[in-house]
Image (cartoon, rainbow, N blue to C red; front, side):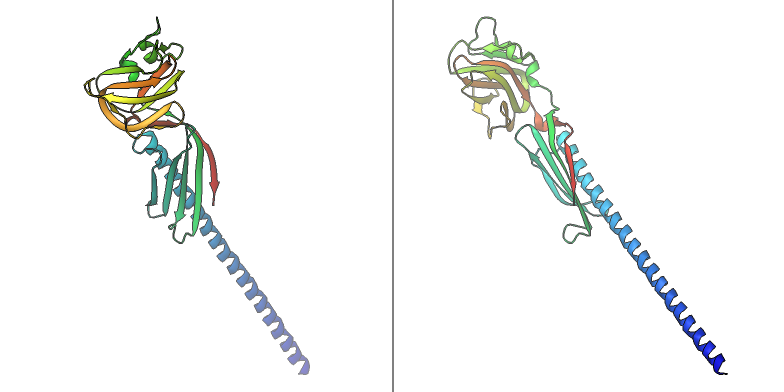
Length: 264
């Protein structure tokens, strides 16, 4: 009888041990499953944040290329498909390149569960607009021999307009009808200073407003719609290889490929 009781007691102990072991295994398994679920959820949120940032970057490239927005534009807290938001900014590096920075947040940037940032820097740029000078007629205050005003708008940087006088020289473009433009690109030498003017009737002239030269040789200003443009230049018989005119706001910008950086 004593032996039977001992056996029953041992059996109960072993059953208890097995139950505890199985419970421990079940707990460990549930913990692992919970961790995997949390991990999978985190990875999903991270992926969503990344693609939100990519969406902001794509929006910025489209807006700049299509002429919908000018560099310096940005958009904040844009909700996309109920999955999260993105904030994007654009910047001119001052050397002819742009930088676009886009951050994605899930669910938003206040208390994000996940966030990713995508930066495309050193993006090469060129005008997608056509050079209005190519179809204009050029005249000048003076010219040396065969170095006529027409040489400055023929699309060939190997030909030049050369003034025959020092200082107070000008190169004038007649577009034939009213044209809209907001940028002048010049390539020349012996230029000490210059100014840009416009006219609707070739009589009354006004200086362009808010001119900014960046990079050197590229001057952007407030858009005007007129028939005439005059490039006034001071220097010792200045020379202009090419004088180009563009409607950047209306024509957009062509963007090259930049360097990508992803962070979180």
